Image 1 (tube, one colour):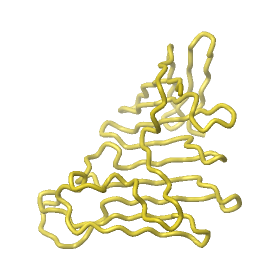
Image 2 (cartoon, rainbow, N blue to C red):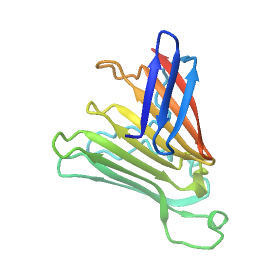
Image 3 (tube, helix red, strand yellow):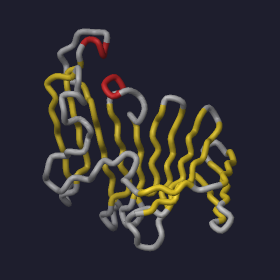
Image 4 (cartoon, one colour):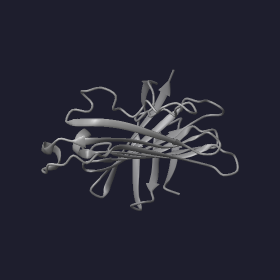
Amino acid sequence: MQMVLYYDEENDLGCGIFMDLMIGFSFSGTAQESWTGYRMDYEIPPNNEEYTGALAKTEDDLYGVTEYSESTEWDEEGRVINYVGRGVLDEGYTGEESSEPRDIITIHWEYDEETGLLTQRSYWRSAAVFATAGHVVESYFDEKERLEYEGSYITHGWYHVYYIYEGENTIPTYSLVLDECTGIVMPRFTRWVE
């Protein structure tokens, strides 16, 4: 268990405990926003197609990277399990001259052994190419393959996003952001509308 949340919808008050730091948090007021998609939306590719959601498809995205190549791996069930984008970085990124390709983006997917449903996705991209914010993202999915939690590195700590669904909805009803900064967490609670 990472987090415990108590929310009083009628009075628009919430509190909880962030277990990683064993620290409490509280909030009053709920932002209401139109749903535009998940914060870090890396789509699951169709089986046996190259992965195209890695944020590295234009020359602008890959400035300073040459000889970019991609590889995608599937398991015996035809589900994507690994994506790797590699390239040669300009000397300005590394401080050394090298013609050896390096990993630029890696993504790994894990599935439940019994149900075959997606349970976890690990995303990494080179901080030298894309900067540090969001260069590491860990995503966890519920039993309906809906994104339930996403933690990402940001320069001052970690950015934790919890998605809360009602019933069979595929769009979250709420999200709770805990912005972890040097031993404290700053909450933001949002109600999403379509």
